[in-house]
Amino acid sequence: MKSIAPSFLVGALLALSSLPQSSRAAVIDLTDVTFEHQTQASTGQTTGKWLVKFYAPWCGHCKTLAPIWEQLDERLREENPQDGIVVAKVDATKETQVANRFKVQSYPTLKYFADRKMYTYKGARNIDALYDFVTGGYASSSPDDAIPPAPSAFDAKMKE
Image (cartoon, rainbow, N blue to C red; front, side, top):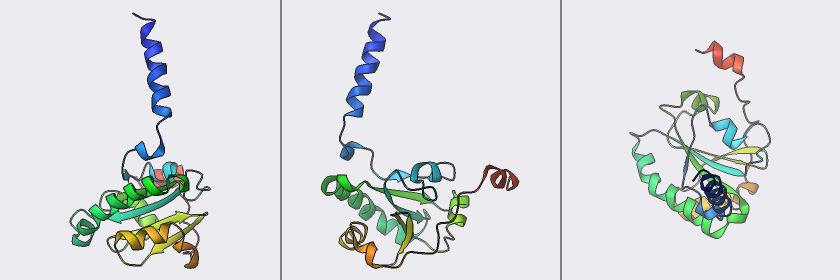
């Protein structure tokens, strides 16, 4: 029985690794701890382009945007898997370090991290406008100032 377990695990891992990108989980939840590791926003963005919604659970506009956010993620995975665009969200009321890092002052705040730059989305909050923006429209808009660096381990410890 012991020899079957490793074979099963290897088979399961191979099966999972061969899934197309469209099979990944839907919108990704980011936290103070995971934001920089997953997005690599300030260190090169080698994990793809990231559209991130900073939201508050009680915000009416955020609640209205929630199903559109899910639909956008699905559409991007189906129509543009080769572009590596990841749709994510941050509960700014809980993940205050990352919200402060990006100077989030209103909800929802939409930030797009692409081509080693950061763009604040200010357009219409519908699926077509968002889709057009992330699939190329952002290139005709001005990027924000430099992406704020991730806090160092020392900075994080000092805030405790």
